[in-house]
Image 1: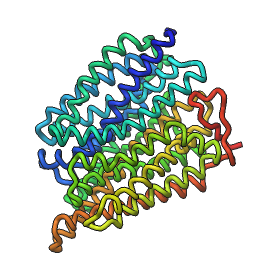
Image 2 (image 1 turned 90 degrees about the horizontal axis):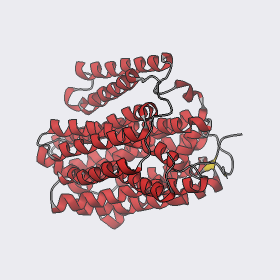
Image 3 (image 1 turned 90 degrees about the vertical axis):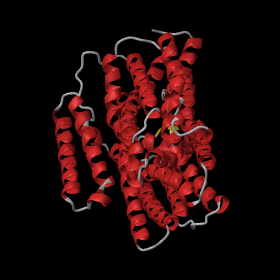
Image 4 (image 1 turned 120 degrees about the vertical axis):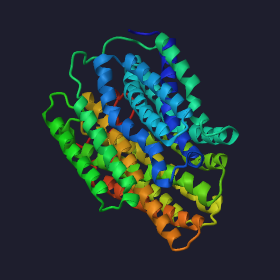
Length: 484
């Protein structure tokens, strides 16, 4: 179904609005976490599940969502994802218990994964002319990056003026509008892989394995790291991951084709994505708590504190990153960007208890914004530079999954490390604020190490030309950086 120009751009607005809901949800919740913890009586280790329940199902169902779109039609799956996400947002907003909120967040992650997986495919269908497609992808990229800035501000406003429930309830009118306009504007039709088979077993095994691993890590401090529970859960997770790999090696239409990881850049970019996401998600989660628990900031102040980093990332997404990559290739921007992000986390790690915004918070935020904005595009390009154009979408899906899984597991590890250090400090007689500060310092330092390791790996192992060249047929006007 070919739409006229005006309807195509209106359809893009609808798609971007749907994706904005998902992007908002990953940042708006961070600002509300301390309020959620107080109201529903979470501790720091269990509070991580408000984030991880979403991240794990999002990452686990991202590849499955894309496959479902190929099989049953992208508009149908986009609508289904928005409906699921909207209803789950309502459940989150009405939650009065930890269990209900975490369960609803997990369902939100499934809906968000489906929407994210098929939105790009729909944009490709709507915009076939290279010039228009490049503009459309630029708008989409800006929404993804700029949504973070909107999320932290919106989270601060809603939590301060109303309460934390509204960071979820605000999705309801947006979701209804997206559903109504999607029915009118988005092209329908069957997916291009209609009649193919669905790798449900692969999605179930990898998602359950990662959830068991995160649960074991999050509860390791309370249960004991050598306890039967912790070791049993980690053992079960390993068994399920092995089973997942066996399934993917044998199934005719795998969720994650293992042959992709024989490609040097694909494999390296996914490892870089895991390490970097571990540090970045921990930064978002723990710095929000650090600013409120240690520095005494209110929700609005936390939102404003995140604004510089998010605005810088948005600026890079509007073309600055692509220009840098075309001039210098992918290795240097990736290595320098991740090194700057590591330096930003290190600044947080060495900030004093009585830290000041300008001296101790803003410098780290600026470095993380510049570093994250500089490195994001090169990591995605590296993940796709060794594959054929027909597999670029799959490669992008793989690295996005690595981001989500790395973020979930890394956040679990670093939050648990912070909780353990805090508990040890309070047991020795140190006051709670100082003890919490010590816990966050350890987590930020570990995050800095992960980001630095990712930068070194990307700068030394990734293959890249000295300078990028623009492929005229590239859908997003990005650089062609495949190694010769």
